[in-house]
Amino acid sequence: MAKRKETSCAATLTAWQKSARFRAIGSEAIRAFHAIRHTLPRCTAVAKVSGERCGNLARPNGKCWCHGGRTPSGDGWHRPVWPNDGPGGERKLNRKLAAIQRNAKHRERKLAKATAEEREKYEAWGKTHQPGSKVERVRKRKERQDAAAFKTSIETPPKRTSNPELEELETSLAAARRRAAALEIELAGNKGIFG
Image 1 (tube, one colour):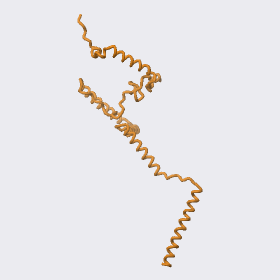
Image 2 (spheres, one colour; image 1 turned 135 degrees about the vertical axis):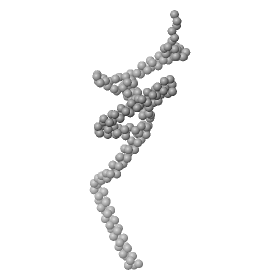
Image 3 (cartoon, one colour; image 1 turned 90 degrees about the vertical axis):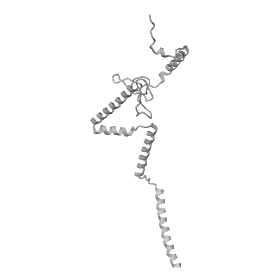
Image 4 (spheres, one colour; image 1 turned 60 degrees about the vertical axis):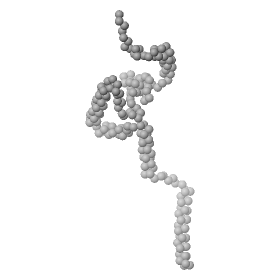
């Protein structure tokens, strides 16, 4: 009987990956992971039917792999990921381009059917979710908040609290200024007589 050619992933393993030491390292890593697995954050998605939480391990955005955990994030979240030039690269690229066109048409149809209120909400979302780095978006948001706070502080005059001592000092200061102005006029008149 002829020996079958190995087509499983075991055929692609190196000698090191087939060694007992490699398997021991892998087993130890799995045991260490299972020891801390119960402390890791869980997916926050809720099932529509049962109302129970998902319970799968969460990704950085708080969702598991099947509830949006693979959603792009970071500085390049808005850019498509192009396939490399490997086998089937052209086919993958054509599929990606077709998907981008299909999504654009779907978005246009959805916007055409949208009410004025829904379109306004969509445009407001677009203004607040500009592409680029998160640090830059946070900085711009802070600048807008600071500008709005400064504008309101300029438009509203500061409230003066009534302080009887302060009012008394202001009236005596005004009287002293009037007396000083009168003395200057009197002094100017005296210079004219003796001058």
